[in-house]
Length: 244
Image (cartoon, rainbow, N blue to C red; front, side, top):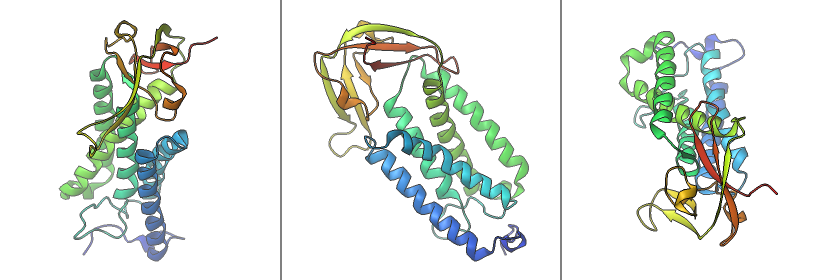
C-alpha cells in the first residue's frame, strides 16, 4: 500500500483529475526544458521565467494536496502522482542556462549561497513531509532540485535584479564563436565573444554572452564590459553595447 494521503480526500480534486494535471505538467516541463536548452535564442526571457514558475506551481500543488503527490522518479515503479519531472526538468534547464550565459568574478560565493539556500529548502521538505525519510530516491530528487533551482534562480536574480550602477570598461570584439564542449557532439554550448584580457575582471579574453544577444555583436565593434556589484553582493560581468 502507498503511504501517501489519498488524493480523493481533497475536495474538488479527484485522482483522475490530478493525473491529467500532472500529465499536462510533465509535457510542459519537457517542452520548456527542451526549448530553453536547444532554442535559447528565441523567447529567452519567457523560457527562463517558465523555468522559474513551473516548479513553484508543482510545489504549490503538492502543498495543496497535503503531501499526496510525492517525488518518485524511478521509471520502474513510478508513482502516478509524482511531480518529480515538473520540478526537476525546468530547474536543471535554469541551472544550465546560468552556467552557460552568465559570468561571475567568484563562483565559490555563488555556489556557497546556492548550497545554503538548497539546504534550507531541503530541511523544510524533511520537516513537513515525513515520507521522505524512508525513501532515498525521493530524497535525491529533492536534493538535486533544490541545488539546481537555487543555483539558477540566485544567479539570474543577482544579475537581473542588480540595481547598482557598476562600471564599464571599453574594449573591442576581436572574434565571436559558439563553443561546444566535447566537440560537435558535446552537450554544452557557450556563446562567446573575444575581447582584450585587461577588460575582463577574470583576465580571460573569451566572455560568455546571452544567446539571444550574441547576434547583435560584431567583429571590430567597440563594446563595454560591464561589472556589477550584484543583488546578492556576488560581482558579475557581461559584454554590452556602450551607452551613447
